[in-house]
Length: 198
Image (cartoon, rainbow, N blue to C red; front, side, top):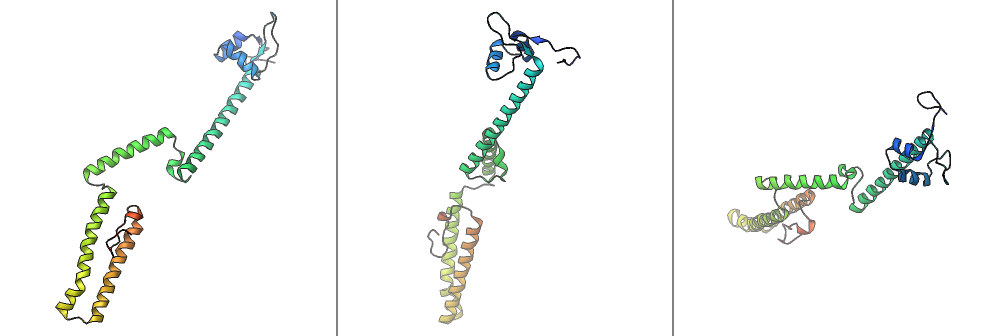
């Protein structure tokens, strides 16, 4: 066999091959035990002999195999993590490492705190409380409207019933709009028809 310079490739001892790979002789012994090729077996005063080209080919193959196994393991972990967290693979966060997810969460927290200080972000429980107050006013007004219309405009009983039905439809439309917006847990949404939770 010839080396890169065109001459015959020399047989190297443990110290020399270790020096090329920048590792200790103990590491060479471990690599030999794992399958690194040896041209001349040593022992009883005979030095081990290594051909660099064979050792380099084994090293490159071993590194490539280790990298492939690591990628496969990382992909498996990522898939299992996504399944456990219920994240869709198309989600932009799906490919992030735990450290990147932590950084993203910290950035989102800082953004939300700043938005809350500016008044651009409201806590869900505060919004539910506000909606409850608003619906109480709307409900009271709409509940009293038929009686007021009957007194002010001398509406008949059937006309009052039509007004009550119309008002109920308004409240149902408000409820549907809020449910579709999914502003909070559905269990916390106020039912505008009875003042209770939906």
